[in-house]
Length: 635
Image (cartoon, rainbow, N blue to C red; front, side, top):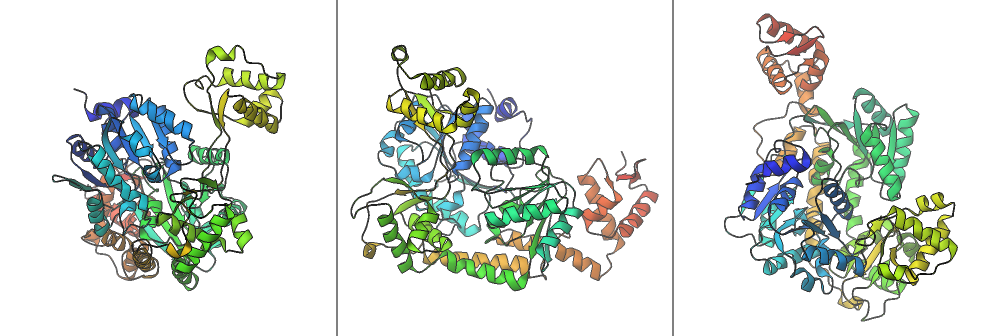
């Protein structure tokens, strides 16, 4: 009988699992409800993709990240695995086609946004699917204590009634003990359920906080000292572009990435960074999700994150290859303490303000009282705010809280490529009469997009236009003509945010904001900000220890590598026995050996101290020196 390792080797080319992956897979295949707590980069997706190929049926994966759905579906198809994804931005025709294919057994994995569970008629469709496993990714979102509360996540437990024999696998990279308890409760875990935790301790990752007034100069200095590729996180699109320019002017290869770029620009920049053509990517928080680049040597936060969960996810994108790496935070305490505190008031404006934004939204989108249920509308936030003289940040927070309260679904960015499918029968195409220009466009599509009779295919209007020596506008207009003639179903590309009304328009006086959406989340965010502040501004405690204790672990001691621990070592001489033990431990983790300067950096010691220890240990035969100057353990 085929084993999980056989599946892993056949589709991914690996001969063994990463830590905790095999245990989670075994638990799922045994039919147990399972909560998997795995750090960023731990390989969460494999823990459900492998069982999906072993179970006779369909695996449902609920995730809030539309961009991650697409990336994972594309990646699965590249590995020969049939998968689809559904979210509110798809047309009704597209959704029906995908569900039909899943019902007929043509798919192994179906990704859903949690809001899809609330759509009209979807429950009737989903009951017909042969579901054998339910996966909840980013499971912290289901918790009232989670840091991104999504009310639609609470509907996931209803799936258990439709598929009582299917186990539930909940996955998250960041959950405190209280959140973990809440996840198990909200999902109705059955007796025999298991919780499998991979430690949050990253032995190869050194946390460093640098106090500085000039962050631009500090960033250039840090990146000049650490070799290898990196990610620099900032909080705004404008700052991403400006910071990339600062690095380029300093002679450091850099690019920038944010959600406002077109899909083509995102792919081009991401690929250049992954290939090493760009050394450093300056990005907003969207970058890095789902990207598997193991050799990131440094992650720098120029602006403080709002929580240790967010920080850990982003910092964890460094050193996935197990080699030494750094997570550096640049802080100006006199400024950044105020920045953190202001985020609380910005994220939770007064409730009367929320009601006012809801009223203005309905007027702006022409939604009458008692109408609008399941209506999907594009929303240009800049124009909406300009119309009503609203501050964009506060208005965005209000829309998110309205979304979390269940009145609307607000999706800030949907970067969808154009797609089409031929819906006219093949025999009818022979009698089709088109104008010469439209005929050229249609024939190009038929020749170059061979799968369009069975499924939607992504197309590139710019490629079609350049190939036929036409303008993009001409191609677009002929696509619309083919759509009006009933030849194709054409969905033009869009990057506009949208609002989906989850219920008909309500009187503003009837709007209720549940305690778990407003008061509880506000209090929880306050605690998260305070914990983030302690990590950044308290220079008396080991950074790694603060992180581990926050996530419910009990570290036996300090890490010895963060800036606090290194500072303590400089204050008092370290016993030679401890230096020798640390050096030997480092070499056991690096069997190919290390240069003395790399050993000193890894151990956070002065090069002369490490050189003395190497000579001492070499005299006793405990280590050896190669011709290239590398120190290693004796063979």
